[in-house]
Length: 221
Image 1: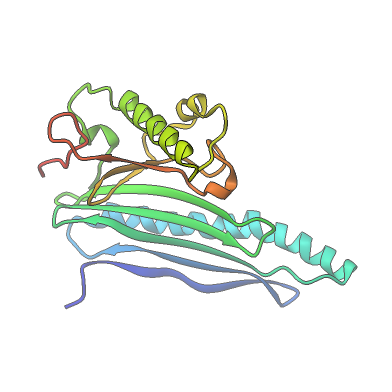
Image 2: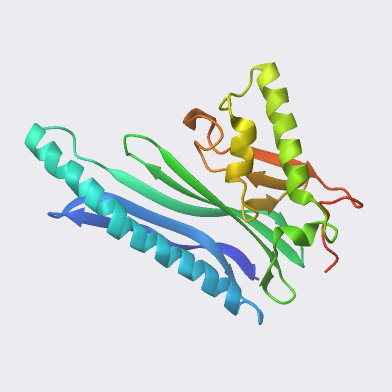
């Protein structure tokens, strides 16, 4: 029997051309849910795929075309860009699912990656927000920032990561409560590339282990 909640192609190897020359290919692999409560869930990811497609056509293709025209003039290699929107399940039970969705652009002068996290309660097909995983009025933002700074200090002391010198201020400036997802180990929250660390560090991610008293905890659904 097919899995009622699965990843499926929303866009598969769509190629955008200029002068019949392929410059940009698109792929989107996103979740689809076959359930009585799935309307909002599926509409959300359909809209995400449509927004990705529009951005590629309206923003990326003109950039690729400009490079293509310049390459013709300079007898340089033609651009071959590839944009991928791909989700993966990071936590899943019968009542709860969490996903991490990355948009990756390759073939450009610099590889670019953008991330989003989504968590859903499946009994009613509703999204869950960060406060749902902490006690009422808990200072979760303060705790998350404190734990992120402690992890940064530990990593830099070991020489395994490099962050901007003013990362304590940047952690507060770029914190957003929508940037999280669940894993078996805990609640992961992340920052966009280049905001608190150099581009080579990718997307800085921090994990808060589950704590039944202080949070984060898995809600009883």
